[in-house]
Length: 410
Ligand code: ASP
Ligand code: MG
Image 1 (cartoon, rainbow, N blue to C red):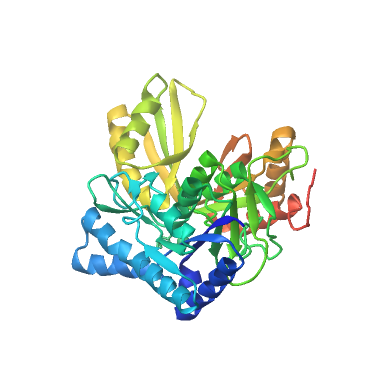
Image 2: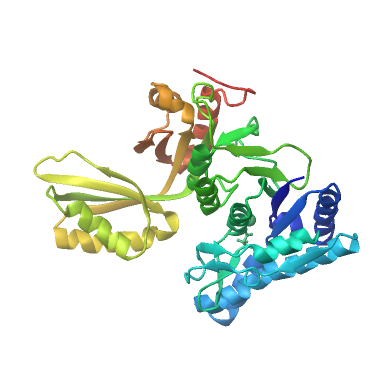
């Protein structure tokens, strides 16, 4: 007998039939002796609908009130799923984040979970009930309702699994696991049986939307056994692992990409201490996250400074940079919001030289110009023109043999 925390995403509970299907599955597992805590998202499209509803009333809704509104999406689903379970003779109790004391900070719309009081949940489990918890929401110190950011139900699931010391946290959605890359771009993409936590963290931060980034960070911190699976078909899904023998690990596990990128360059800034800090300080003050940063080797006592930001913050960044350029007497500001980032990820590259050159060769063969490069121990990212996204991802997927089961191109 084990304790499972299962999380079902929006499409998995998107209509009454889907909710009934989830209830069938949960009731069956309960019958076979598992203890179950089930976290659900709002029905698919509901959170977007609520956001639009809010904006139709107030274009800039107060964050506190927006969270009160958004939390109703998940509250609907917990009640419906519990009703469906009861109808199947499976005792169930639904709880909002507030009711099971999912304590967060007060950052409305992107709150962080600080603490969970699992006593009440344990009591229900002891009585043989399935506990159904609303994802994506919590309560701050002053009793205000908060939400955890888009995709935040993943984090609720992982946090509950950590607090309850669950045997496994299972994240159900409409995809049956983590893939070597997006199957919509590369039809030969394969589901991975396992992926290391570090790789998953890179994939999530590089734009693979299978899991909310924060949920992966949380899982790593508490080493929560985490599995990604589909509620639409049976299968083992993908297990996120914490210990992996690097020698046995595939060289590359996946190709991630991000379309939402833009780059900015400020040319001819003085080459002296404090300049980078000043430029990025101004960008940071506007709450804009910077990703890749490149500074050229100086010539004639000036240098060029390039960085990337989220495409949605391109205009704002450009304006800030033009102001900075005036103060620094820089030569000019240029930018490009038609770029993408493509990355190869794999813990196997730690013990292998030459991955970067293989990657660059493959891109060169397709005539793809690399604009920027950045690396970490287990990933190499390049920025290229957006028109090369598909071509680049496909070329890299085949160069590293990812379409082959048990691939290990070396
Ligand atoms: N309902 C929220 C959203 O759509 C949270 C979630 O689904 O995880 O982002
Ligand atoms: Mg989701």
